[in-house]
Length: 169
Image (cartoon, rainbow, N blue to C red; front, top):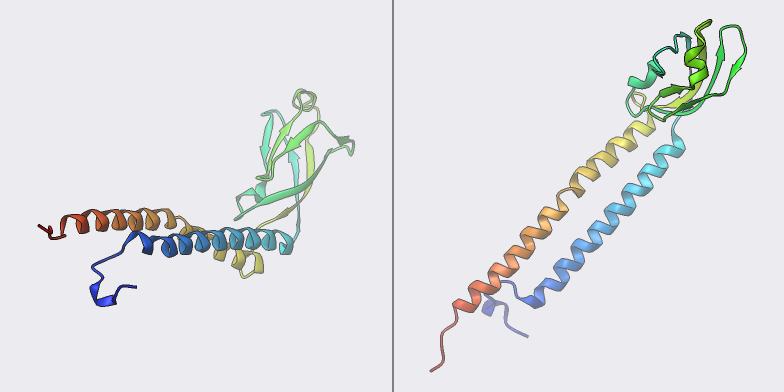
């Protein structure tokens, strides 16, 4: 083992612990973000929404609550204003309803909807968890840059140390 005073910089032997540390940090961040995301989805409060008197002639409708932070629709039911149920439609989690051709063509009455959704309400546990996950994800974006800088420093250190040796003649 070399004396610490003899070391001029990092060597290839020093690379293994550094790489292992960054891999471990990346794995912990990835697992942590997954756990936080799952926890946020499981504790999110369900809210009920309604939107009445929808004109379906455009073919799609965006729900009025869709502007809320992290809005996610989980269920949607629709009826004509006369009470008959509709089934020819699809919806996305973002709150966009696409009406079937028969509903778009039938403009004799308007449509009412009721839906279940979640969002990040102010001062709610799901908002706190999502803010934490966002902060961790922002930090995780820097790991690739840190690894490249570390690898560059090691390569540069090896190259410079090979030119700095005295020749033995």
